[in-house]
Every structure is written in structure tokens, then in C-alpha cells.
Length: 69
Image: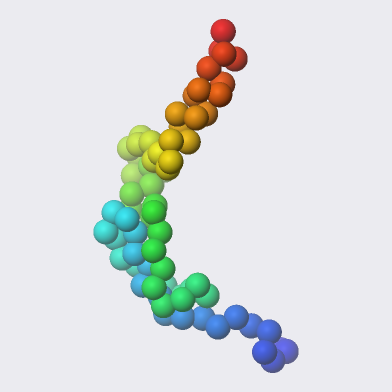
């Protein structure tokens, strides 16, 4: 294997906005903060919940409101 081409890995604490903390290997750093994890994502939980960041859902509905007619 070639030397000095592999990224440095850290034993990271990944913290979610819901409060879940996971320890894993990461190249991002020792502490990583995420908005959605497998503990709160609708695909894994089975609960439908809209995660609206900066009004994206409202902008989408407003932009494509006339196409449904």
C-alpha cells in the first residue's frame, strides 16, 4: 500500500439533534453533529414527519401549486 494517501480516522462521537449519540470511526473529526439519524428518521421509525429546513416544503408547494390544476 502506498504511504501518506489515506485519510486520518478518528473515533468520533456523532451527536444527533434528537439527542442520540453514536460512536463510530470518521474522517470528519472527533465530534460530529447531524440533524437526522437512524433513531429519528421516518424511514427507520415508521412515523411520517416532515423535516422542514428553511421553508423548503412551503417553497416547493408554492412553486408547483398551479401544475396540479
